[in-house]
Length: 416
Length: 95
Ligand SMILES: Cc1cc2nc3c(=O)[nH]c(=O)nc-3n(C[C@H](O)[C@H](O)[C@H](O)COP(=O)(O)OP(=O)(O)OC[C@H]3O[C@@H](n4cnc5c(N)ncnc54)[C@H](O)[C@@H]3O)c2cc1C
Image 1 (cartoon, rainbow over the protein chains, first blue to last red):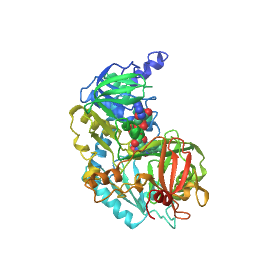
Image 2: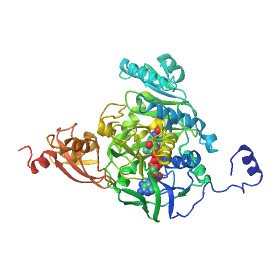
Image 3: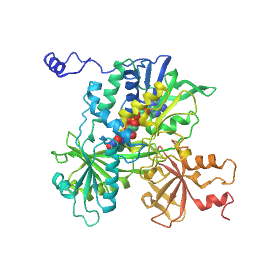
Image 4: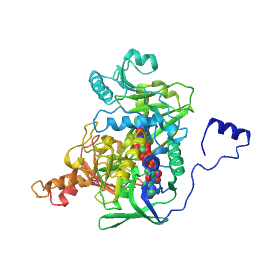
């Protein structure tokens, strides 16, 4: 069923009786050419591109709960492509370009809003670093704009410009960055994949891999064995747990990240703002709530809830750049499990087990990557070769010394 | 989370800095033939279990001792806290 303005009007006039479920609820078949584990943004995007771009239709997405119940439905929805390093920037710019055409591609309103993002600058050294990053972005075909203090003031007059410790001296803006309705991304990809023949199987947990002579032949699940020509694992925070079933240890730790929403307010924050001295980022949802977050809690965790010290730290970050936020009440907060990699960058690669592929290590930045991650994983699964913008996301980069460490903090996942 | 420090009693986890898996105490032998692979495993690969996890915490805002904390990564419940020093000595190190 195609969604359109005409369809909305027609349904409004005929009592909304013509709407159908957006995807089927099929029984698992005994065999698929490709099984994707994980019905998050990345798994569903992989299925969509496998079917639509690479013509692979005998595909299943296997999700232990309901689609969109993981990080894709828990994040602060920021998209951007303001990375520095060669291994990353072309990939994230590819992703931003895919976001720009996504709703037409999916025939689904994901509320992609290119409202712009500004990273605030608080010191001369930080300005130098941001100029360098902005240039790297422009060299890779992205947009970047260095803003003076006056320019930031004109857009966000209420920020704490004259703070004694962290005065705001300017900003690095990416106007094409912004926010996207996160659940709609999962639903849009699911609907499109389903209509192209992909089976989306919910409430089906993968409990083991069936391998023989170094080759993966399928997955054991709570709904029985499902055979597969190829298996792609895209389970984000659960990567360690799932790949342990294939006897693999990963360069990944699972950590909890919290997000926060205030009560609904009148429009006050037109774009996305990030605090460059502490760690705090904020935008305003279309319902009016301020959506914000900061650091991960910092210890290994599979609990989808965090602790109070980070709540305090995030709120302090908010008060430091935007003191008026103290007048708003916190409405709700939650946590999600991050697959924090050893250099802060992701992995899209085959494993040592033939037919088993892995997508993970997204840290707290994988939402913006969703379309490109799906595209590149589909490319790898369908063709056996990495997509040109994802060639650096290899497992063996930690062995060969080709880390993609944007922050330069080394193998310390809670600092990325 | 409250960490029951063996010397100082119950302390707020916010006083501590987290390093990671306590296996980081088992530095491989650099003279071994398999040293490159051993150091790759040691520095980059993690068991990352959902459940019981032995991990290193540093009491930066306190007595600056290293602790080995046994904690459940699903419930955040802490079941055991030892001085890292004692753990190493029990293995015959740092005599
Ligand atoms: C609080 C928070 C804020 C964030 N903010 C941002 C942001 O502003 N910008 C940004 O770019 N990124 C952000 N992120 C990161 C981003 O959300 C994640 O990197 C990304 O969503 C991960 O990919 P995914 O959508 O596929 O993961 P998920 O949605 O977690 O999908 C993984 C799926 O795998 C399923 N699964 C796990 N184990 C099994 C199994 N054994 N069998 C079957 N299925 C299984 C899970 O149930 C889950 O549905 C944030 C994350 C959090 C938690």
